[in-house]
Image 1 (cartoon, rainbow, N blue to C red):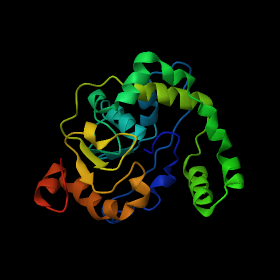
Image 2 (image 1 turned 90 degrees about the vertical axis):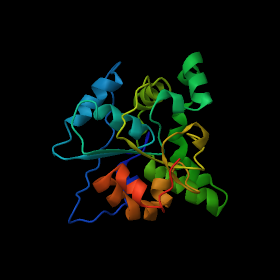
Image 3 (image 1 turned 45 degrees about the vertical axis):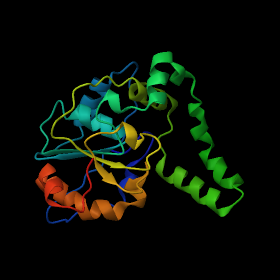
Image 4 (image 1 turned 180 degrees about the vertical axis):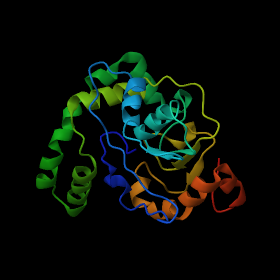
Length: 224
């Protein structure tokens, strides 16, 4: 499950052994009026048609797969650049939840991504705008409002003890100082699923097959 507003192409560089795994991409649905995260997650389950499944979610997608796992049996639950409970949310998100300031965020800015590429004044900005346009394609304003609201107000205090959490120590959306019990990728940012894909291709198969045992038996996998 991709992150907020992102499409599944963020996983385009993830390659797992085809004789062991088959990858299925989940995509964001447009929420119905006042739809709860629980009901939304149940709707997503309608697109899951397999057994012995491994759920992997990035950022807000990591929150969603945790909700999905409450209703279906999973072999493994893995979150990337995400949070496991409300305690791991940064202070600014808790502040947004408490004050309701998230309701006035300028979500329409995503509409300007296409224009940003045209007016970018240097190669760096042009490249960044192109990446935004490629990966952040879910721009429905009701979806964005719903997603932001449910992210900052996520009410979860009990952590699934089997969850595997992978996090970058340079993540600015969910800073590492608030994160506990996670596998740490040094230099990993919030978008490391894209730019650190080699790490995932190397270690995801072990984590899927052996779970937390793989962490304990591999000194190259760093854990906090």
